[in-house]
Amino acid sequence: MLEKLGRIRLLYIVLGVMLLVGLLPLAFAGVLLSGRSADELRSIEGRYQAQLVQDKARQIELYGQRYRDVVTGLARAFEISGGIQALNDQYDQRLQKTLQEDPNLIALVLWPVNDRVHRAFQPNVIGLEEVDARVSEVVAHMNGRGVVVSRPQIIRSGQEMALTIAEPILGGENSQEVVAAVIAIVSFQEVFLAVQQPTSKSERELLDAGLPVVFVVDQNGKAVAHPEASVAFSEKSMTDLKVVQDWQESGAQVQSALAPFSATRDGRHVEMLGSYATAELDKNSRLGVIAIQDEAAALVSVSDMRWQTLWISLVAALLTIFIGLFFANKLTDPVRELASGAHRIASGDFSKRIDVTSRTELGDLGNSFNVMTDQVERFIGDLQQSAKENRELFIGTVKGLAAAIDGKDPYTRGHSERVSRFSVAI
Image 1: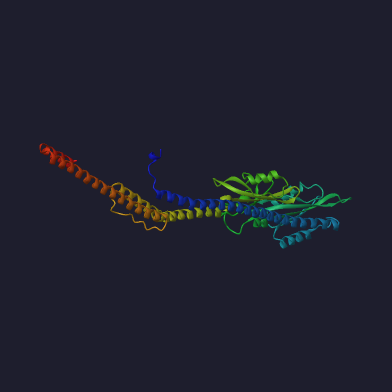
Image 2: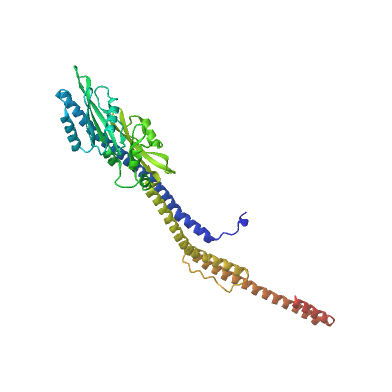
């Protein structure tokens, strides 16, 4: 079986061993380190995303609480002052002044149950019909004391997202009857600024750069704030993302851990990392703060490390081959010289000796081979000398016998001479 495989050069064995010894530990260490780096980087990204969405959610809650307090304060002020009987045209001016002092207030409305509505609004942002429509919608959801907060909705005339906050004013005989309401339409622009990264990049560009994309959805999964304003203004459904579905299913869960999922974005299948947090505007109005990130782009440093390991391995392989060839030749040249010397001896040529200058065991082997060659040559020389002497002795003996016979009997002289010639020939 081994004879069919043919002879394997020692050079190849040496090179193979050097490559295995040199590259196998390097490749193993590279794979192990890159795997651990990926796990650690994924953990860091998870903590960062979780903290990011939690911070954004708290910002939104504080923003909502700030204007809830404004509306509640106005309602309590009317209750303490005795109700809304003294309302007149001066209140319209006061409402307008309040709007001018706070640019985030788009509209402020006093809505008496049985009297004229007093309103102030920014006409360059919202129209009168839109103000009344929002007021009617939020008033329809009021039921006794308690703030009512609507979901953020787009103002079509001003192309701005806003939420509506309402607080009833109680009065009557037992102060439990809703006699009016204070309604504020509040810009959602600060929330846009909170979720927008300090860049003009689109969602795809952010994902390709490995940056997290943070956006806000309502309870229906529709975008209400997004780095791309057009996505929020179109109220695009984001329920195709599993992380949004998880948030909807979680109910009142405040925060999630980092979770991988697959998504199709712009026709591409992308592996992503996602997390969410809940911003509670009131008990019936919650927003989901979602962060998504392209996993491959986020872990690009690990990919770079793997490529670097590959290139280093290739360079190391080339160096190993060149260095291995040098040392393998140093190792195999004496062996080839020994093999050549053995072939010469086998053919009977004792005229040359092998020249092995190595200081290793191969040098000792070469010297021993030369000593063996000398001894074999001397032994063969001795054998040849002995054979020559035996031949001469044999011939001398035959000649002596022939001469003795010839000397005794003249009739056999010729026969003895012929025997002598035959013996010489032999």
